Image (cartoon, rainbow, N blue to C red; front, top):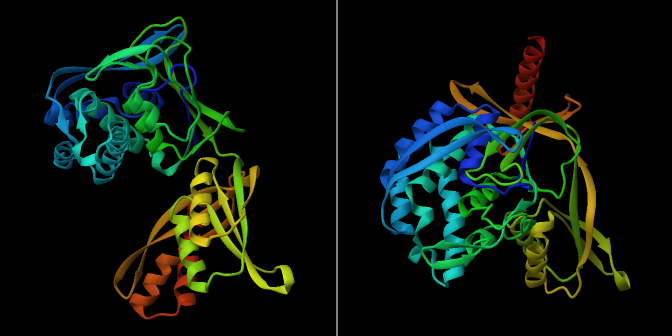
Length: 402
């Protein structure tokens, strides 16, 4: 399944995300409960949901009203309070990631460290409730198992009052958080993209496209904004059946003939850590019949400049070739975790499943999983792989039989 978040018309905010997720099928009673319960560390909020028509589009509105708020709080103290919340570990980690994005943006804007950043509006009870509710809905719908595509964001325009006085729209924090993705001003003099909405968007999206790709829509959900404009003030989320995905990628290449094997191995690993989608090193013959290697890196557009900088610094190469907007088609992928018992010990193996038109075209156990089992049980790697392959075969046959 593919999920598309579409903030092109009216921007994005925390409560719009929550409303759209509830419209998509998330349990609104559970979201209300966790939002009101978790925000008590920072004040109190009332959360209510209702169906509302926004300029002709029926949507779900999540109303988050702060009853009281604490004073501005240091990021370090803020995170300590977040860590004390009694919520699922995965949700907690994702919530902290969202606020870390905002803290990093604020630190750059104010010229200070993350530890010294003070949260004002972002640290209020309603903002905390927005983030927790959004991430809860994300996991409630198992969107962490899906590919999420973000479209360009409408930012709004004009100016707005804040704790720092009158600031332009988009706010500095919003703009800093959205670095690397496409966004645009307007279509109205009002704040359409908030810092919390932008940070949630950046955290849950897997890729960013200019337009909706080839899809088979199965459900469309709408989350309403607080204000009424002369256009539908809604965030749209589209659920689509799997199709062959076409991605735009950049291919980065350079020739190397002066690095040791250890240097190339270090560079290989570092590029993957820093955002490369794939890295390969190809033996070749260079000028004057010198043996060398072609370093080839596949990158998303937003990561290309960063990866090029790394290659220049680590290799000292004088030239790098970049093929922009190269298209590639990718099979749909699923991860199936299964448990296996060997010598009265239980292990978990993740299987990578490749799909084309809902037909399985590949099925492989995760190498690191079977490697750990082989080492732990002192078994041959192939023996563990064969057991895993039989297990996934039986599982898939039983699933298809049902």
